[in-house]
Length: 142
Image (cartoon, rainbow, N blue to C red; front, top):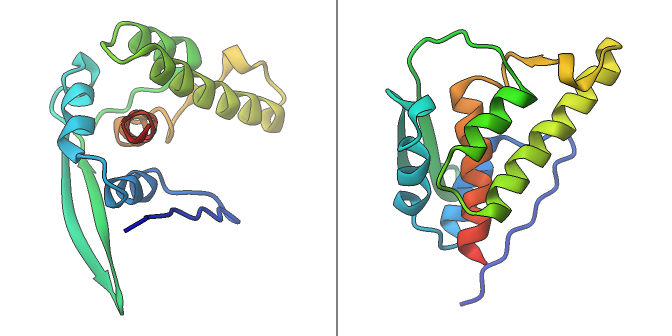
């Protein structure tokens, strides 16, 4: 059976739901979770996979539980975390590019330089996990 994923993010995309959709396409969640949670920044973070049914739809559901940490990270901070990881070059590039795009958008809205942006929500560990996991899952799908 051929599987397809249609993404129509007319109002954005949820990182955990996007990653879960990639799991439904065939990515082994443990192959995504393990290398990310092995990174020191993710100490104390839990990521779990379950099934969710809404009406007639059944889908994977990824949940990420994090300790209460109020770190505000810059693109530079995230770049250092990514470069120190064991992730592949293409995954690292994709993650950094995603955060650079987000920093550019926030900089434009706030009238600042991208290097001066400190992520609050997107720099939180659960959002970081979602972005890291999505890029790693895409690589695993080939």
